Length: 180
Image (cartoon, rainbow, N blue to C red; front, side, top):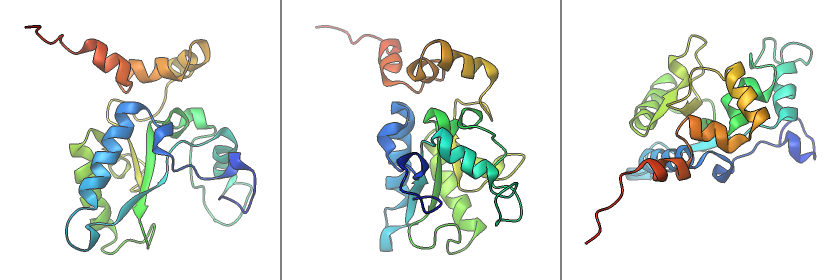
């Protein structure tokens, strides 16, 4: 839960089924690979996936009008300026040590290598480095006005289809199997 509230809109959402289908599959495969091996591997977990408008507003206020922290934690003024609001981004942390994993930056880099193999883009490579952040690899760095308009004019599934993150579109584009 965020900010000590009982309001579900302010709760961190870890439900991978709220993500775009292809992205969710990529995340699950990457997590399985991260966590295989001796002693549970890297012990990575999704801290947060889909982010509500209310929670994004709270995050945006932190470091600006809500203190601590002393500096902003996000530059996205609404959840529609972040891929989290479209079910196309997640934050990955260590299962026990959260944002302070063993090995620090090296741990995030190992996790990033695995997620990138599974079609995700790492926030650690962004202009404003965000090591826990991963998003669907077909997404540009941030949602555009065109994407927000598509959501408003149609729906979330239309956005997922444009970014090839929707299972139905991917299946429709697959070559037909030869019939005997």
